[in-house]
Length: 461
Ligand code: GLY
Ligand code: MN
Image 1 (tube, rainbow, N blue to C red):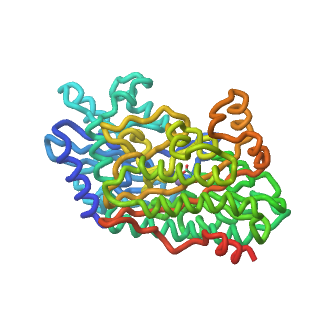
Image 2: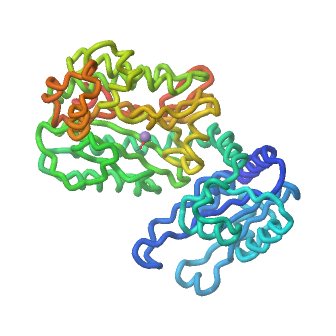
Image 3: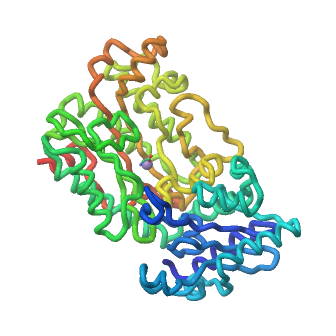
């Protein structure tokens, strides 16, 4: 937890952005896995963490904008709860830690909301994503479940995005801790890799490091020889000579800030010539994209820069053909790079994604492209100092997508389908780092993690 004044300042800055009414914050509840008492690891809601910092279930808060009053709602532990879960600070003590003077039992929250509802006051809430909180809002505010997201408060969403999008020095320090733990996880995976072991052995090693550091994974680990499947969480394959391992995993610190790093490396001690050629294109795209980061530059432009470098590289190998700029404008490169260049990162690995990607990643004047590939770009808006984001280009050979495009005769001016047959079982390469936008440019967060072919081969030996 940060010191109380940090949470007080965040709440006061948010309150200034809202004309009137109540701001309702719902913390998360425990979430059951297979029966009520067997729960997933508890994860507090990131907005609740950002404004109230308290990392325990069954809490809520109201900022009454008109009365300039903040109230934390929660229940003190009964003696039965102490028997099962140990002693706990009271809600009043927790409130004090984050600068909240007024606290009340959880049950009183409903009365407060009903009273505000009867007086026709605005009750601002954020888009709920957990079923428990959806049901609460539905019952308390009498809003159909399906309408909750549409009725979430746009001024509240915009207020949170404006504040939480710009990371403060103490947040950057936390993110950098997460990146450094993530780096150790990647180095360990690269060192532990050998043919004959299972992907799950590497997955266990990296998750163990995240837990040993006091936190856990920031998202389910991708550790796969099938890197062409973008979010591949299957870990049952045995590593074989000649394959590439794509590892996309990161740690979440004890304060719940995320790291999100990807490295791709050979099962053998060295890359094959074909692997080197594809890897070098992705690395070039990633490094040039990072170098292009500075305030004012739309991230959309940097995504297109990386896409053009990828198209040029594939043209040089004879896999694509024609003019790279025209191929990217048409979207032909998305056969190989079907996702966005990156996303914001902070308390969530895809930061604030619960608030809606349009509000987080796009300005009001930017509409999201419907073109395949570009439609997956989560961040397009002009960059600002204090943004923390990922840069993660990739090249993938997805047999099913190749077959489908070839059967449709798509982009035959730009794609050399006969040549592509040589790469059918290649897999995928992605390289990802976490970057802070500074006043003058960028800073790659954390200690360097082996990334060039030479660095990775040195580690693999
Ligand atoms: N690390 C997974 C993703 O960014 O989607
Ligand atoms: Mn990422």
